[in-house]
Structure formats: C-alpha cells, structure tokens
Amino acid sequence: MSAVDAIVKVETFIISVPREVPYLGPLREGERINEKGYFVRRGNNSIYPSTDMTLVIKVTGESGTVGWGETYGIAAPEATKAIIDELLAPVMIGRDPGAPVPLHEDLYDLMRVRGFISGYYVDALAGVDIAVWDLYGRAVGRSLASLVGGQRHQRLPAYVSGLPRATLTERCDFAKEWVDKGFRAIKFAAAVSDDGIVKEMAALREAVGPGIDLMVDLHWKFEASEAIRLIKKLEAYDLYFAEAPVEPEDTEGMARVAHGISTVLALGEEWRTLYEYRPRFERRAMGIIQPEMGHTGVTEFLDIGRMAKAFHVNIIPHASISVGLFTAASLAVTSALKRVPYHEYQHSIFDRNLAFTDGAMGCEAGYYRLPEGPGIGVTPNEALWNHVVAA
Ligand code: MG
Image (cartoon, rainbow, N blue to C red; front, side, top):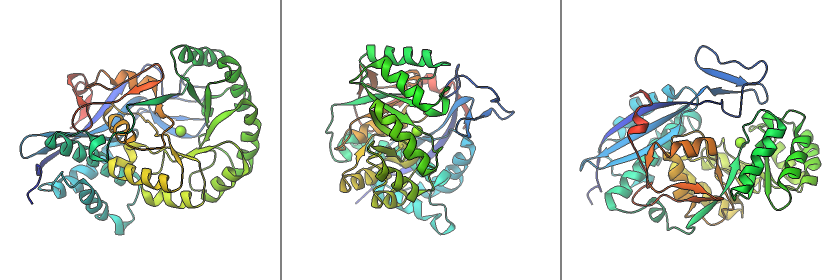
C-alpha cells in the first residue's frame, strides 16, 4: 500500500516569547536572571527561562500538506532542535505519516542502546510525533480525536493552575476572581508560599469557600515522612489532590506517601514514556496521572492513557509552557479518553497563545472549548513567526 502522503521535509523553529511577570510570579529575594536569560527559583531549586521558550516542528508531505508539532523547549531548546535536525529528520524522509505508531517506535529505537530513553531525546520524539499525527489527520481530513479512537467529551473541565501574585492576600483575591468567572478548581504552587503551605491553604479555602476543588503542587520538595505529615495537616482544608510531594526518583517514597494519606496523589508531569509510568502504576503510587503532551507526544500519551485505564487511575493532563500547538494535541487526545476530571489550564500562557494560532480552541467559564477540524485543529499564524529566534 502506498503512503498517505510520504514525508519530504522536517523543519524546526525555536520560539521565544517575552513575558512581563516571570513564571510562577515576581522574582523573590536572592533570585536573578543570569547572563543566559535563566533564573533559579529558590523555593524548588529549579531553573526557568525569563522568556517562554518552545520548539515548533513542521513536517511536509509530498502533496504539500503540512503537519505541525511542538515540544517542550523550556530550557536549552537548542539541544532538542539538534536531535531532530541531525538524527530524526533524515530518517523520517519517505516514511508514511499514516503509520505514526511504527514510525515513533522506530525513532525511539535509534538511541535506545545508548541509554537515551527519556529527557531531551524523548522530547524531540514527542514533537515530531505530534507533527506526524497532524499531517496524517490533514492528509485524510480527520480530527486527531477521531484518529485515536473517537471523541468522548465535547468540552473538558479546566482547573486554574497557579496564582502568580506577590502576596497571599493578592493570591486569595485572584482565586476569587477565577471563581467569579465560573471556574470550579484552583491549584496553588507551594514553591511560592510566604508563610508556609498550611497557612496558604487555610487562607485560600477561606477565600473561595466550600465547593471549589483546591489542589496543591508540592514541587518534589519533601522526604516521604515529611510529606505525609504535611498533607495530613492540609486535609482539614479538603484538598482535591496533592501533587509531586517527593523527588521523582523515589518511587518507594511516592508509594509510601500515597498509602499513608487519605488525599489523592497526582504525579507524572516529568515522566515521558510507558516505561517510566509502569513501575509507579504497579506500586499504586498515585490516583491521578498528569501526562504532559510536550514530553510524550500523541503515541506515548495514548499508551499511558490506556495503561491508566487498566489501573483505574484518573487522568488530569499537565499543560506546560508552549505556544498552543501541543496544548491543542493534548486537548484532542484527552477528549478521546475516559476518566478525565480536569485538564490543567495555565491561564497566563494559554490565553496569550490564542493569538499565535488559528482555530476554535478556547477556555471560558471553567471549560475548555476543543479544537475542531483535521489534525490537531489549530495552525500557527503570522503572530507566532515574529518570535522565531532560530530556524
Ligand atoms: Mg507541577
């Protein structure tokens, strides 16, 4: 059988979008932007860029049809770009986008024996995988949700992620604004709490009242016993979930926390493949998984979603810094999965991104409006190309 629209060209673009307020809120004492444009958050000892960086992938078929993808480019996107340009692109030429899963498996194999089974290599795979699925959908005139099994949800509940304001009073007021706009779920990032996480949570619950789902992101900061003690204290404020309490390497610690609290644990934004998820599922280390489309691509995201079903675990996808392309893919694939209470909504990024793409995607009054049309349902427009820093 001949190819749907054989791949003839693969291109990559590093995008850098300026932002007024740094990610997770204004810089705090002792935090400064270094000569390369990055800063370290003292609250979680993680490095962040001062602009929003991402990597966009364009795959062209022999008929001229174009597929768009995007991958995680938050730090040193040059590395991911080089992997695609040097290693993946030449191997992809001539392959059939109508067979995206075999292509993804073959590309994964290229570097397996060298131990490149996660990190930047798999981010690169994620970006091209989204572009290949998009090209497939556009070539045959079908949406991504229909290609991966069929759309179940017509809209998806959105939880408001992060309250990037300088003081606790301002964060409480900001939370109330979202509730007034119709949102029913809010997460705060413990990395930026001033007077301790318990006080922050107590004040937020007081501010929004009962009936709103409150979540906390603990940013991998605690030893397992500390995490259990802390989360038990937070139970008084009726947490919907507690996210990432212990370091990602500590699978046993995660399982201990999960089994030692009555709050649901949410984990997985930093994991990329089925192989990373499997031991955590087996240890029953979480009740909610948070796959990030920018790390997984469509193929792994689907596999992970199916495995979650086998373990009766809910899926609340993560939504990282992007320009909206992998967000569209995430919404499309999530709309085809079963147990999905929410999808993350990073308002400061998502709302801005709507200017960079053409398509029906949106988020209002507590719900995502899903992309429509073939492939991922959105395409980059002129506004995005003003922010290309390397092609
Ligand atoms: Mg998180």
